[in-house]
Image (cartoon, rainbow, N blue to C red; front, side, top):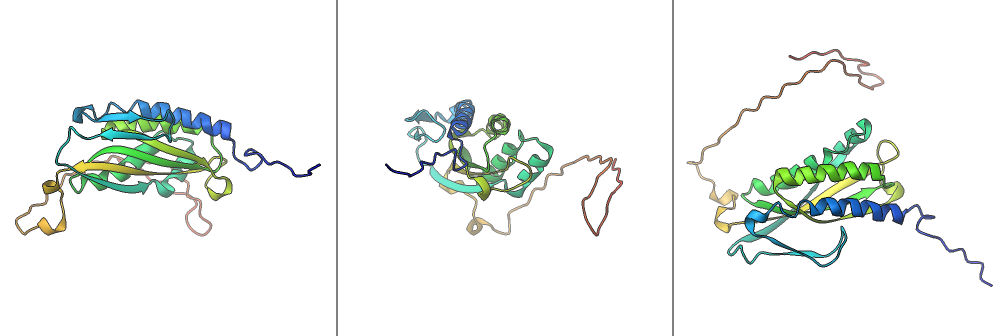
Length: 221
């Protein structure tokens, strides 16, 4: 009789049931973004009913366009969300990071896919991220075509019990003659600057530092 011990995913630190529930939350959120590019007549085809499933689009209504792709992520800013337990605005940063890379060259962002890695999946956090993803997609006028969620244990570290890292890729389209590149810049070009007002009022800030300030009082009007 064999004495081999069978190890489950859960024994290895991966809760596949919670993971499936998290994927379902994000998938249902992504569906709500699929009409965001109806102005382009983009047809989204679903071949698999899951967040990481195969999907493709039909661009036959958009002749003579080029397609580009770029990648980015939120990075260490996620720790702010972890420390204040507020995750529903993280998608705004993630989408901004990938969309601006397309927009500055004259590309039109249309499709976003993401990879969301947790140390331990929290459905409470996933629901906040999904809520923000719907909002970010609406603001950026993009479609969330798919994504991947993984539970990686100690390979993902941050602040608190639930830490994660979120990165994304974006597909954009554009007219080749309208793509902004260095070779077309000349001395007749003009730079337009837009002034932005940001009003900040800080009442009390505690700075954790061994050898520096212990507190700072600042009031900005």
